[in-house]
Each structure stands twice: as structure tokens, then as C-alpha cells.
Image (cartoon, rainbow, N blue to C red; front, side, top):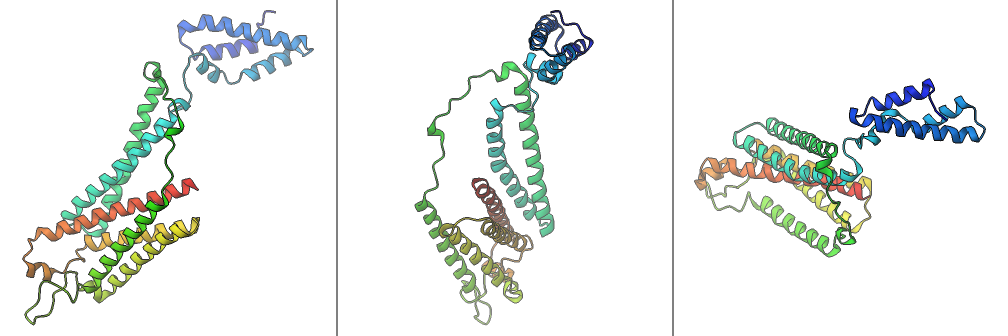
Length: 316
């Protein structure tokens, strides 16, 4: 049977319109022959001619999708063959470059003497901008690879069970817990003894604390220690208790609160005691470097807390 109805002509034209000129003659013959055979099969089964044509064209689907199949042209930004490599590369770049950019910007802004709001705002803004650029340019690269056959026709990497990640060792996690506990004890002891144990004394022979007296006058030091102890408590809970959403959320919030508090103190020069640095003869730039280091460490801790929360949520 020769199939020449207006509906079929419209369908064929809509398909060919999306194909290169050199491919159209051969594909038109192939497509019309395929439609004719399918319509004949339905007519032999007793279908009405109009219903048979409509059913066949419905099964073929959208002409744009059919044309993309003939032209070997993907309809998605990144197809299944490249999607895993794409997500792995984006994740790796976001997890390494964004924290590095944030730490560098926070360090520079702190050394420049910016206020706490400016330091935090510029740091978060730089991290967001870096993340957007990484996502955009990496996606654009894979879109180009997806659409240029010469670039994507490479042998696929074979997967073996050796590529499976090792489960976290309970002994290793216990070692991290012990290390965290020891560091907390040492830091807390140093903070609490700093007002009475010092290498410098004033004219009356009283010790000059390394840390700013403002921390004790306002009670901020006790709040910070409470946050650090709570963070350690959540570390123990994650080790001994079963993971759940409220526990992970609360632990992440406490970790974020610790990091932000330290960033605010360092950015406002509320950590070191100016009287101590003067008595010790430290250069004027040293306190700024120490504050900048604290900001960088806090940003790293902040990023780690957020990343760990996301990782645990994905595993769950």
C-alpha cells in the first residue's frame, strides 16, 4: 500500500525539517515505508484506515524526538553515558575549590581589617560565585562533549567491584573521637587557665592573660566552651547512637554556630588581649595573622560540618 494521506505528509515533513539536507531523501523513504508497513498491518487486523494512521503516528511519537534519534542528536544536556563522570567532576570541584576560595577571601578580608559582617558576607559571596562558575562551565563543557561525536566516542571505562568505596572503619572513627576529645580538653584548659597562667605580668605582678578580658566580661567565653562541648557530645552521639535526621540537624547547627562565633570574634579582634601582645613585644601584624588563621580554620570547619551533614543525608 502506498501511504500518502495529508496527516502522514505533515508528520514526515515535521520530521525531515529537523534533519540535515543530505539525510532527508534516504530517511524520508525509510520513514514512509515504515509507516506504510505499520498501517498495512493494522488494516489487515480490521482497523479503519484513518484510525490505523492515527495509531501508527501516535506510536512513533513526537517528530522532534524521532528526528533527534535519526540524527544521533541528544535531547538532554548531559546524557547517561557522561552523567556519572559529570556529577563526580562537579562534586569534586565544588568540594575542593569552593572551600579554598572561601578561605582565601576570608583570610584576605580579615588581614585588610574588615568588619565581621563584611568578612562573612564577602566569604559567602565568593563561595557562591565560585560554585556557580564551576557548575556552569563544567556543565557547558559536558554539553559540548555530548553534542560533538568526535569528542564523546571514547571507550567507556569498565566498572568492577574494586571501585566500590571502603566502608568507614569503626576503629578509625573511634580514633577521630579520641583525638577530638583530647584537643577539646587541651583547648578548654588553655582558655580557662589563660587569665591566671601567663608568661607576662603587669606592674603589680599579676599575670596578663593571652586572651581578651572582654571574653570573660561578656560571658562569651563560657558560651563558646558550651558550644564546643555540645559539638563533642554530638560526635559521641553519632558514634554510639543510631543516626537520625534530628540528631544530624542539631549536630550540624552546633558545628555551624561554633564556626560562626569564632569567625565573628576573630574578625572583630576579640580573641587576643592587646595588653599581652604589647607586653610580649609582638609585631603589630602578628595578631592579624592569628585572627586570619582562626577565620580560615573556622571556614574549613563550617564547610566540613555542612558537607558531612549532606553526606550523611545522602547515605540515609
